Length: 166
Picture 1 (spheres, helix red, strand yellow):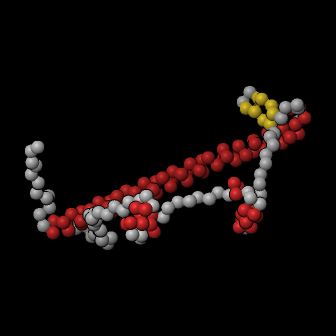
Picture 2 (cartoon, rainbow, N blue to C red):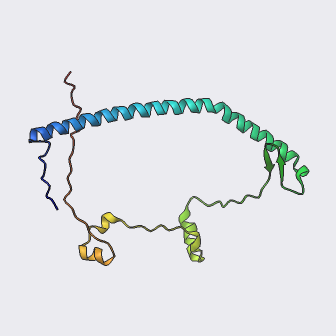
Picture 3 (cartoon, helix red, strand yellow):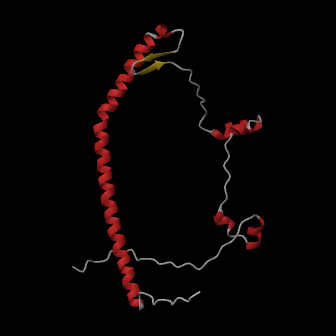
């Protein structure tokens, strides 16, 4: 296999590195400006769409109420069925069941446990990797994990605004 030569780094001095960090910061500022402008435009469009849609939402609520009132008054005309097929849809009644719980769920949970109704309780278990990595490597291996360490490059841009040279 032929050997490849390592090319010289594009930057030749610490001053060039610092200058490149400045260019990164300027690009970040430009991205922030673009993002802010886009978010403002999106917000304006959403607000206008909501205003335009409100009259239709109000009409739909009014129409729904009128259909519900008529259907309730003429419910006996749907018997023996609980619904009526129409050209543009269907109307009807269906049995709806809701469970209402008190605001303090701790008591309900305790009673469910006491009565052996654990299947009504949702428990989500997950692993806290930040705490797990504080253990020694042997212990992490015992539980089936691995500890991967690497020396990774990082950089940080100072957040001060860069003055325009113009």
